[in-house]
Image (cartoon, rainbow, N blue to C red; front, top):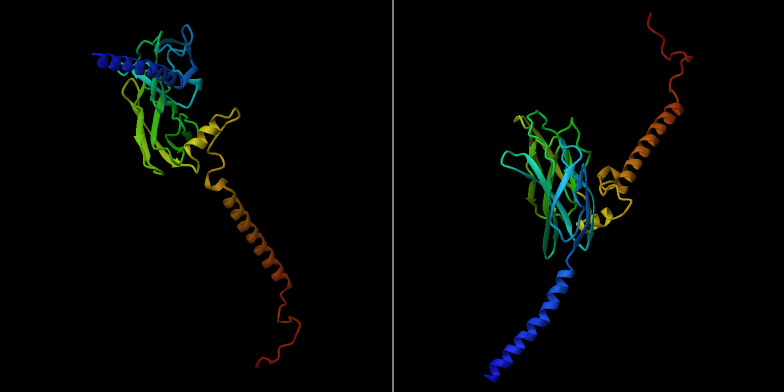
Length: 276
């Protein structure tokens, strides 16, 4: 009995010693300190330990989009939109994804727009962590290039419809290291009309860690600028050299043409007299 009692006491001591370690590990998990949205105000403000919110739209016809956020620790932010059975947008979900798990925050619309039928099948933008479009989405173009880091293997794209009544399914795609592909997204208006968008996935010569570091800078504008083939130093040097060579060749030909002597003298009498 004494041995059993001693074993129980030892076990309880181990459990009590392990609990603070668990709490310490939990405290080290990344935390979403703040977040804000364009076209939406979080009712009663945001708190890191609260996970369900209502959000009031400034324009109930327009989807809210991520404006800013602050994360303590190493984590990625993913945004997706929530729909009811009729594909009517009802809110959005923000997922804080990190190595040991994830934290989910739900934002439900406090003033959802009454469902209205129209033909607006346009995208306003897309949300893609560590992805950058060659040009912003506009009302005329449907084909775009989407640049991603060289080692990104999980591609998540959240489309943002211009009209809150329209629907476009998000995309989550597994890629092999260095793989490129082309994807199509279909935006469907509330009246059923469709518009196809294509995204040609391109890789830049930067890792996800390098892109993340660049994006964290206050003056960040683009991680693609300077990585396209025509923007690389070696391409510019080659192009300048070729252009310079062409210019030198043209000058050489002009100079040669001027100094070349005509072997025939127009005033010299012919050696042979014409036969009469």
